[in-house]
Image 1: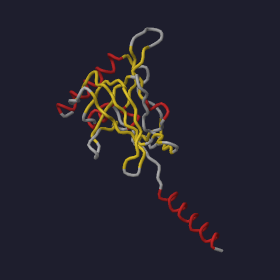
Image 2 (image 1 turned 30 degrees about the horizontal axis):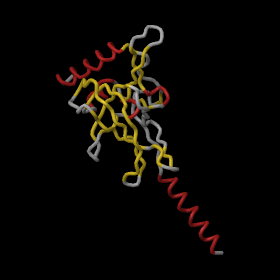
Image 3 (image 1 turned 60 degrees about the vertical axis):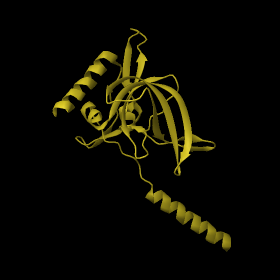
Image 4 (image 1 turned 180 degrees about the horizontal axis):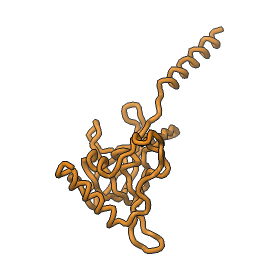
Length: 186
């Protein structure tokens, strides 16, 4: 009888947690919206990854060397807080949160967190990986949104998309144009 009561209480608690848990919905942000929301837009190179338990959640802290700042000011080294990661035997996976590995380069749109560090604006939407085109050997930029559906309020649908294999020079030009439009209030 006692075991049955414990089982029912456990099932009720689990049901309550399941009902209170919600999915994260990302609203699609264009370049102007990302630029406006970000305090810093910078080209970075990942140096280290550390996963920690912080205030009841698992967070990944990625340390980056800033190689170029297009918007805002950033120290030469920054730490970006990302929800989720693997801490010991516990793993927390959050759709839409970018993951990094040491050595890779990206342009990140960054905003401050309540904890006083930085987070990526729009999660995967504010993450643009820098790679070399195998055919031309020129640097290209690809946004992380290819694998994550984001909500487009204009069409009221979830879509995948974003910047794909854009020449680095064109990407920088588009970001700088968006910064200029923000500066003059357009």
